[in-house]
Image 1: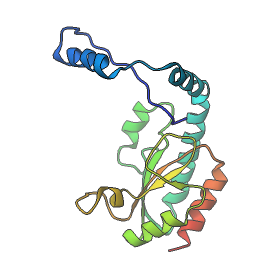
Image 2: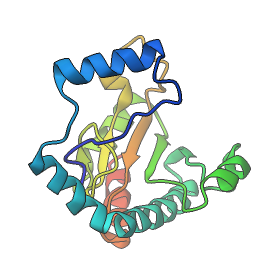
Image 3: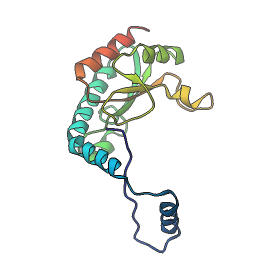
Length: 176
């Protein structure tokens, strides 16, 4: 549900410098989930497969829709057959191509910001993988030294109804 991070760190060499560092950090900072965090993790795992399935389906549908949109210069998503690394992604990503994609809006920074500001279903935030759809203008976050194109918007697609997401993007693109 995008409200916690959890993971596992392991090594084949318990005498390594990296493992020693990890053990020291665990003692100093603590690296054990509390009971509430464990409950959040369990809650999220129960619906993870369904959420990922819906997010993947929504994202490929949006990518295909935007791929031919007259106000979009490019859709960067490995699930599209036109993507230069589609075959590699297809061989590695057997359960779908993920819920993160980028689009390049025709025009420049101002047009991309206008689109992002006109979205209603997509919320403006820097995150990914949650149930809600998000949009961010990376260039604004990274600043003038960024190599990110000024017209690029990053979309993290959630579990909302596909038609609502398409409609939201469509109405936002009419603002340019």
